[in-house]
Image 1 (cartoon, helix red, strand yellow):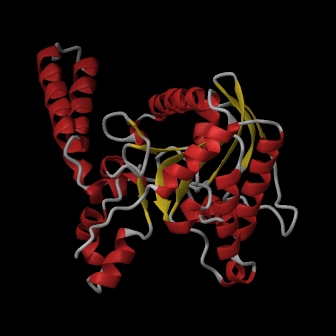
Image 2 (cartoon, rainbow, N blue to C red; image 1 turned 180 degrees about the vertical axis):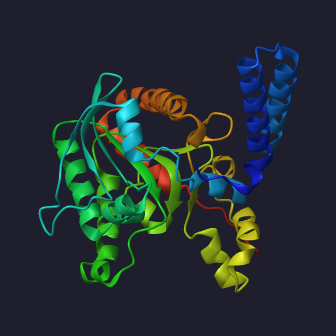
Length: 318
């Protein structure tokens, strides 16, 4: 399992606790007092670490290889998933799966970015960076959802859209721009959830929604901290300062009014407990779907338009 630098004190205590438990069991020694003390120390250490995370540390958690990905949520929080393939123009894109599903008894269409956990899967999923056909497939599924009156749930987890020559030749910019326009006009509720990385236009290409939610340790930004640091400081080593300045994590974006809700993660992050994270995800998404389902299509479109028009702050100087 990937170990983040700031997690090491807690991991070392976990190992010491496990040694005590093994010793107590194997040698039949009552070490309940020592074990209780170690458990209390571990809980205190975890609380100290995870209650005071910096933006850069949250970015590291968002990229953790054991963090639940799109299809993990589909498996844990949805039922009856039926994947649909192809954009009807070029082909299929495995980095943007989607299809029909149920959540809490509701029929929905779910789409999203899918990463891989090993080299083979990452090559198949293109590291979660979708091609133009991925965005065109996503829009095709959203149009199907609109036809049948089904809500759309978009699960965002990408460092950005694929920037390769082939993607440019097949017009990745046009595919994303077209999605932005068409999602604004969808006559069914749309809920977008940033699961981990929400990178640039690659994230926004499925992110125009009535409700934009974020996992507690996800990030959502026009550029990665490393990219920002390379531009402003001429070196990636300044990524922590960039992450602090960019206000890209969920608590900051909530304060700025750019997202609608933050989904709490278990102590230590989603990578420590997939099931608990999926349950929090499911209950939050259902709550927002219930609220949106009560709105007539006309009100839904008006509120969506007003939501995105309200973004941005400025000062006028006379």
